[in-house]
View 1 (cartoon, protein in one colour):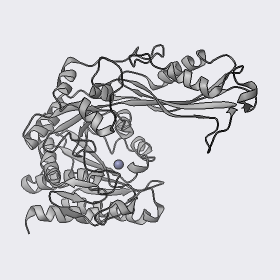
View 2 (tube, rainbow, N blue to C red):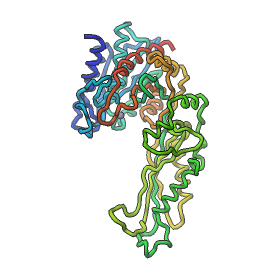
View 3 (cartoon, helix red, strand yellow):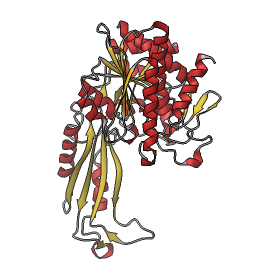
View 4 (cartoon, helix red, strand yellow):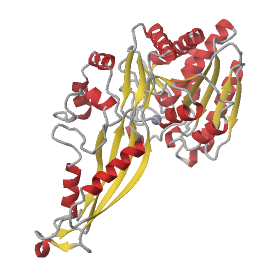
Length: 446
Ligand SMILES: [Zn+2]
């Protein structure tokens, strides 16, 4: 059997575990999947252990440490999303199926394929050279899809075990097949919810309408005060700590396939809306936002009911960029909303969860090594991008272990993660193996 076929067979075995972390009926499957990894690492000569948590286990595997080499932590998650809606699948969700150049299976891209190729890369290098150019620690968790509740405590309790110089993660996007992509920034978030209370009870809109502030109307007016006509957020101090985009970033993103057009195509909107003076990619990746995630109040049932509701509410979230402080933004927003509370209403503001933005310098020593590895693997200079969402694990690794993460995405735009027909591009499976080898070599000589 060819080596490539053997690697693919092993990957298929790994994919067959229905390691759905959110469903307790699959608890044993998640556990068996962890055991599979332990056995795989053992066969490669790595020292592997399974660490129990209050939820699903964490798998750690280490190469024999050598004092003269840097240490690279490789993070991944072996748990997967549920398969619903099952009728949407064209192939059995846990029977890996190769169709043309794609492997269809739940977890194929998110995240089994992306980290298993790193494992096979290490195996390959060990076979070729008998040793690795760096010390490697694999950190593979089984709870990412349920929010990694036990990862941060594990990092806190195992700082020495996990001490490393840099972390590498393949769990982000690649712009297009064959286009190497490195993500170096993620937006943060700050959430809050507010309620306007008006009359002491719901009122007849015929009897009292026109004389009493209607909380549903007032919530709309308050929400409308969040932005000016140019899309700029009007909360005082909102932009105080925002680091402006660098020239190289704007040039790099302007050179990518048209972000405005693809944003419209992906979302199906007929026109873009947003802060003037920025492209859609800049707005999505590197500018802060104020969004309304939910708004409600009054009668929502069938037909009409002529009522002035006693209260109305809205849920807001702010996407943040370096160096905005999530707690400060929530405070400024709360003060702003309270200062704008219309007469005749009382406002309650409740601050929700938050997390800071993350950015690493892609031109640092480690960043350059990652870029060189991507170029060597895929044959062209990597595109350097940020992403609009947040990955709390990356922040935890930064805050607790004190290291940056190289986000080397292998997920293609049509990989259908979390949806039926999830798939992994076969070329990215083998590309991921080569990427790992090149990355460790570059980091070893950086
Ligand atoms: Zn996922």
